[in-house]
Length: 272
Image 1: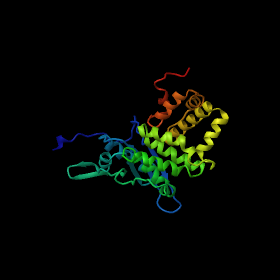
Image 2: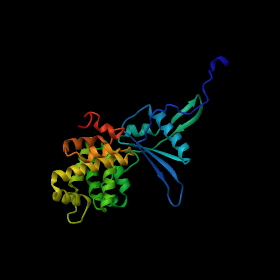
Image 3: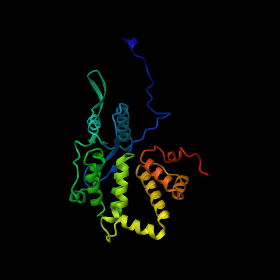
Image 4: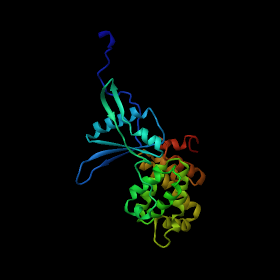
């Protein structure tokens, strides 16, 4: 009946937009093959609100870049991974207008990497294995294998993949274990000039406390940059000039989960 319908505004412009942020958005532009946008979401638990958020991410990125969008959900437990596969439908009765089916990387789809040869040949797969299997019984063995394999690369490659894993582990207990492996990686390949060996020698030359503080600060900035969070000059200065290792460690632990870089200092008040 006509009285069942109520006319709404046809203007779909968001005058007061709600803030929405995907975890990571990348543009894939190979020399040959299809270009597309990759949106990556680290999903730690089932969240009914994600059905709306994910549909919005895909629609917005598709309209903004005029390219196909691949939504990837990275999950660390099987039940969350099974849920994240969807499909999430916008439907009226039997008619679906929009269906969101994320590509899920989880324990069911990513193998457990415990062979260093695989790490060297496929570092991206190894990094994902360390992340998605961080809650499994073999997590410790996987982390150690991946750490040893990644430490055999050149300095920049090693640093990149170690940070990818650290960001993916977020604020989990496994992340602390991973950071210990990063610190101890210097012992795996002595004399080979690995990233961690150079960092260790540099730290001794500059003074262990100062060197460690600088390394922590660089790590914090790198995590924030990898996540695509804007960094003001004030934020950079506050991080790079801090010499309190406990505070730096706290900032580093939280840098993978804060929504804004400024939120690192939310519980401390304004800088003195």
